[in-house]
Amino acid sequence: MSTIKSYNFSKLLFTLSLLFIFSCKPAKQLTQQNTDDGMIEFVFMQANDVYEITPLSGGKVGGLARVGTVRQQLLAENKNTLTVHAGDFINPSLLGTLKYEGKKIKGKHMVEVMNAVGFDLTTFGNHEFDIKEHELQERMNESDFDWTTCNTFQVCGDKNYPFYKEKNGRKEFASHTYTWEITDADGTNIKVGIFGVTLPVNQKDYVHYDDFYKSADLAIKELSKTTDVVIGLTHLRIDQDMELAKRQQSVPLFMGGHDHDNMLHQVGNVAIAKADANVKSVYIHRLVYNKKTKKCSLKSELKKIDDSIPDHPPVAKVVDKWSKILMSKISEIVENPNEVIYYSEVPLDGRESSIRHKQTNLGELCVKSFYLASKNVDAAIMNSGSVRLDDQITGNVTPIDIFRALPYGGKLVQVEMKGSLLKKLLDESESRQGNGAYLQRYKLKRDAYENWIIGNTMIDINKTYNIVMSAFMLSGYDYKYLTKDNSDIVKVHENPDGEDLRLPILQYLRNRK
Image 1 (cartoon, rainbow, N blue to C red):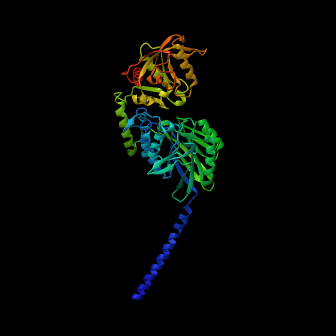
Image 2: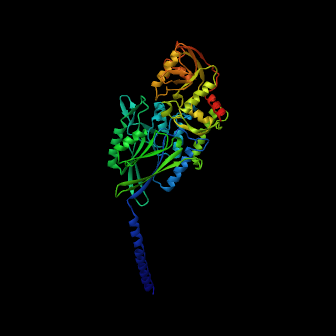
Image 3: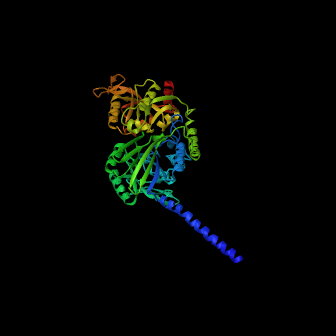
């Protein structure tokens, strides 16, 4: 009896095993059919030219804590998401000019917030080289994200080496090119190659620039041998991006910086995308690569960053820390830094590409306010380099916006000077276009015959004029001959206890509100 039961039990197990095997076979075939379909989707979130960690326009637009939320949403949709920055973030900023724990901040706050957001990769912008070499080294050491560049190098003696960040005693060099290896749920895997280039507009002794066209050509050639698709991370003018795109039609996307307004251009097969400065927007690029055809399709979405997007709490915590530091400093000068004092429908232009080349509405606003706040003056001038905004102000304007525009502050002085010196300054200013020494002016202009007019009459080189300007201008930094001991300066009216030069601007805007 026990033998029969044992036999029947064994027979039952055998039958069940067969049923299990045959029942699993179709499922196994289905899994094989879905394995590695040769198609893979990946995503880039792109920011560029970010100098402010908090929202602008009274809190309505921008804000890196909101960008942190967008990043988390993208990662939830697709783990193959890379968050990149196309350069310019360490400088300029109002916070960067202040001291914290005994040292100038110099972009420390930006790196800390970008770490919290979760940026993965950046290339150098020209403003990264505004600060001193040791300060840049500190910022790189503090960064959790990677750096890539194929045309900018650190000068060490008579040789050039890659920039690096030091972590736990080890040097991590900025990569000549960057490779991103990704795999999707069905096992499709590819390598995405990324190159970074920077235009050579900030010539510092510790920085060497190779030709960015040739460097990009070489990087793309190298990456094409080892990766499936190549992407550009560029900090160039749009005309330079377009020229590079004409040369390199195999690259589907350039994620660019330097230009501060959002744009999306198509040059043959290459899309060139730039988001708005100060994360008023970010670009989201969704790409699908087909391993069989070796083709890449692209869909780019400009994502506006505004108050409809909640803050990501971990980022908001870091932003709040730095915001309190800023407010404590600014509150020493102005009672309510976030008061809306004016509404500007027309953007007030403080972009370096504008204000260092011509008179802008922001520049005129500043010098006009200096003039109106002074007594018995004939005109007002200001070096364009005083404006460190490199952006436009629009919508609600607060004292913080004006402090952002002129972060160094200082005092106003009235300088009685000979017309010959004033004319010399104005003539040289015209030759200094593109430089911070270029002058913004009020009550000074040229007539049709290229004569300088002050008020309504031509400048008399023998007459003495009373000109209001910042005390900094008398340092001889921009114009070496413009110092107190110049024989053509009759008298300098200084007030050591005078108010911060930004306060007349605030009052002028309040009066226009």
